[in-house]
Length: 398
Image (tube, rainbow, N blue to C red; front, side, top):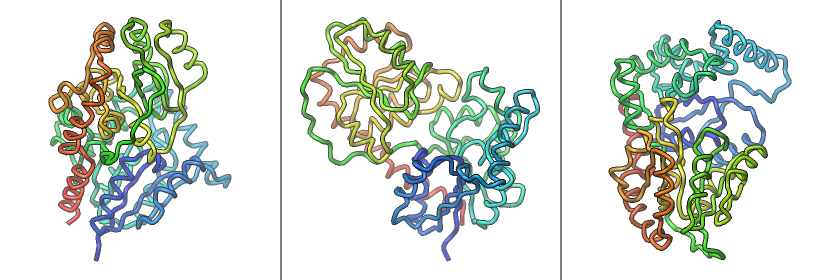
């Protein structure tokens, strides 16, 4: 009889490719895989269903925020109340998300041989499952108690999250996270065993499209679900103003407000360069789109600590199609430097960034793609991570 695995999430599948790839990897082992999550957007639900078409994966919802039933409305009210209570110092589980009791009830109903918990509320649920004698793995995608600025933390139950992280890291049957620096730091913080590392990576693109160019711009790309202040873009555009020997086209793909568009356009004074604002596209289309650009951007700040320690998904997206990357010198992103020396650029201040932009030789960029792809396929391709997660889960589910 095949083993049963329940992956608990708090997000639509199309918004968390890590959960989807994990589910596919475990389905390949013959396990019965169930994803237990929440619904909050019909368009995203349609994307989820498209991803799961012809897949032997069960998709179950513990809460539907789109419903107008009394129970759903009550849960929405409890979340608002929970967040308000938390803001005045009364920490509670409802501040973590919708319907925690129902999530636990639905999880137990799955009777899984192993539960895998992602994100804040599922991590809390995982600690409750451990107390009930269940086997639980924790995928620490982010360091939740350290992924917000201090002024935003008042809406989050920090002490409750700290207890949950401590239980997960010290008592979980299996714990893994996204980078070596993250694994070492959270283990040190909680005096726990160092988690395994599963990079949040992708399969490399096997066929690169032939690009046709109508201009001489060096095309830069930044992708994110939401694009806004505090992500390094303001400094980047300021640095573009200093460059006169290259012409750059900064492409920003993601949801961005009209006000922030104006902020960036007002910063850009140098008419050698231009900025394009592009709409979000489904995850399955990202790689083919990225292959049309010259350089990827990952300009994350090094604060709060989670930003410093993790490796942004976008870096692996860029590398999976052979793009050189301009990346900020966070501990997580620097952990890739040894393998991609000379292919990734790092900066620690605006002056460094201006020097990097000035030194780029357009003719060298295409030649680097094959070298980048070769290294990526050897060490970072999702097929490698997939085999690792299959081995780890099989060891702990037996």
